[in-house]
Each structure stands twice: as structure tokens, then as C-alpha cells.
Length: 173
Image (tube, rainbow, N blue to C red; front, side, top):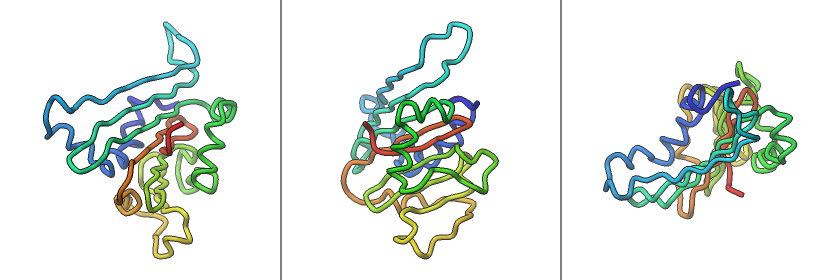
């Protein structure tokens, strides 16, 4: 199973760029704080928890509003038991699975005001959703057009999920 400090840096890269989180390092030091809260299955002093949910509360960056990133880590069974997998399916309008990926149930789901971006864990396979709204999309790309689906007004919410199973980004609870 990958961890947020392992494969997570690959999965969350598209959200990092789409939400312009780099601006936090360039702005006022007093406004750089990202609030982090986590929930785990139980404390494991000698091991990593069986599942974990991490919420990142990101402050406004320039003209961009605050953002929320939710990271889910756990087996597919654990995510289904908590209703997380079902919410990801409902948000995406399909199972968040990348068929052409070494880890088909890992990736990101970014929710924007004009649609969604679904990527595999390494951002090498990308889909704009709903597919009917993006008829000119190309399914396999080296870099994902994340800004196309996340641009626009309103609050941005992202939910990130990582594990051997799902990694996704979607609206907060």
C-alpha cells in the first residue's frame, strides 16, 4: 500500500498545480498556514494505520479562494465500509478506476466548477468528466489539463484518496 509520503506526492501533483499551491511559498508568511486534520482506524505504535483520512485546509492564494483537499488511504473494503468509495463513484459518475494504469484504483479526482479531472496515480492517464461535456478530450496524455476543469469562480474543493486502491479528490463532507 502506498502512503501519503510515498506515492502520494505523485497523486497529489495535479491538485497542487491546479490549485496553485506554489503561491503559498511566494506570499505573505502569515498567510501560508495549511490546516491539517486526520482520522485513523486506530493508533498503531509500530505500524501505519489500516486506513486514514486527511483533510488539508488551504488558505486563499492571491485571487484564488480557500481550498479543501481530502486524502483517503485504505483498502477498497475499508473505503467501501465508510461509504467513501460510493461517494467517489457518485461524484465521478462512474467508478474512479484507470484501466490503463499499473494501479487502476489509485489516482486523483479533482472537482471544479466546470467538471472533473480524473487521473491515475502518476497522472499519465487523464479523463475529463463528464465525458460528454469534453468531447475533444484525449484519454492518454503525458500531462493533464487540470486547469480546464478547475477554473472558474466559487470555492474549490478537492478530495484526495491514496492507497493501492483509490486516490481521489472530491467535495468535502
